[in-house]
Each structure stands twice: as structure tokens, then as C-alpha cells.
Length: 159
Image (cartoon, rainbow, N blue to C red):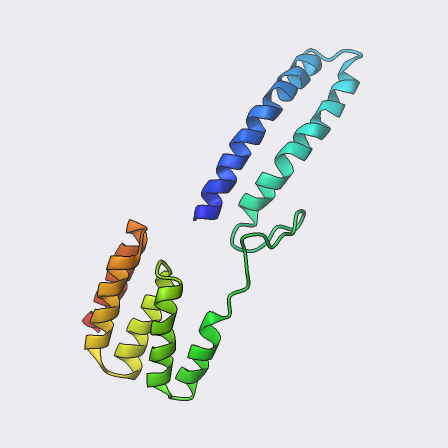
């Protein structure tokens, strides 16, 4: 969601830069006259200005086809080892690995959700899930993420 917000700000800045070119293009095109042919060339810089923010918005969450970049988007394998421990039914080790992630990335919602799921579904220890909920509500910065975590915990408790 943060990427989308940044992409929209970037698009707005670029649109403000491109706006005079769009206005000149419209002025030269309406009514149609001999010089209108050259007005089409004004759309090239407009397209170049707006292509990157538009592809970022369209490809947010996936990738940008026209402007591939990895800046700010690192591959995250931090859950791999913990998930493999869950698959091996080594729940205590998995819990240790998940809890070890919290100080490294305390504002990551998935960590708390995975701890809650592990504690309830696999370990049958709701006290661990409650502690993960408490830590998550304390550490998560976004109110929306705190709400998601609380709803997830309540949904699991209602089962």
C-alpha cells in the first residue's frame, strides 16, 4: 500500500510537469489545421513522463515490465527456514525462528499471523498466540494492520 501511495505522488508530480504539453497539444489539435500534425510529437514527452509511474501503479505488487528494478524490493526468504521446521513438525524450533524475526522487523504483520497460526493450529497453545497478538498490537505502526491482526486472532478464537 505504501508503494501505491508513493506511485500516486510520483504520477501527480509527473502529470503536473506534462500538463503544459497536454494543453499545447489540445490547443494545436482543436480545430484541426496544418500544424496539428506536429502537435502529435508533443505526446512523446508526455508518454515518457507518465510511463514509469503508470506502470508502477499497474504493476504494484507484481513487477514493472517497462522499468524493471529491484530498488526497495528485496527477495525475502526469512520465512523459509521457519516454514520448513513447521513442515518437519518441529514446532518449537519454528516458533523460536519466528520470534527471532520480531526484533529484526517488528512492523511486519505476517510474522505475528504466522506465530498465531502456529500456536493455535499446530501447537494448541493459545497463550503463545495471545502473546503474539499483544506484541503485534504494540509493534505494528499502521492501524489497519493492527485491525487485521486482531480480526485474524478473533476469527481463529471463534473456530
